[in-house]
Length: 154
Image (tube, rainbow, N blue to C red):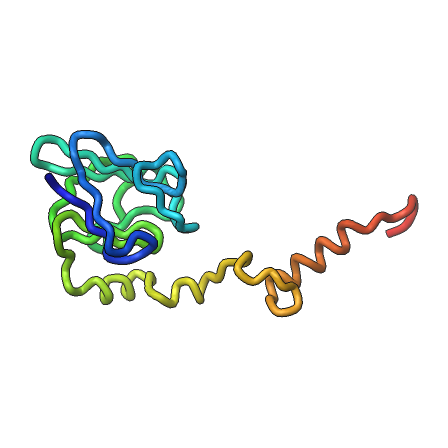
């Protein structure tokens, strides 16, 4: 049996068996492998084994799927070979025990690294409107919108 090995992201260090049943990867709790990652679509990717071959298909995801550093065409099946890294969101996985040693270089080349979370901070991680610029703007806008004005006031 073939296995998916996660090298990075929320499932780092985990592995999943790829058998005859299609595997759905996505943010949805109904996925076979649920990735709690805001860069992953609810139904992002399908992996399916046919005899000895394994195929991958992007399910019209918003941010796409990279196989060996190349964005794959949505909706089209592509054979997934062993040791070829696949990137969805902030997760990297490959088929077979080990991905290439150049995973950090691949992540940096496509802009996915430890700095990604700093580049795209989660606005809910720090909801204090006094310390977070984005939340401060949202707070001000909501304060203005919740005020009621009388007829003729602007």
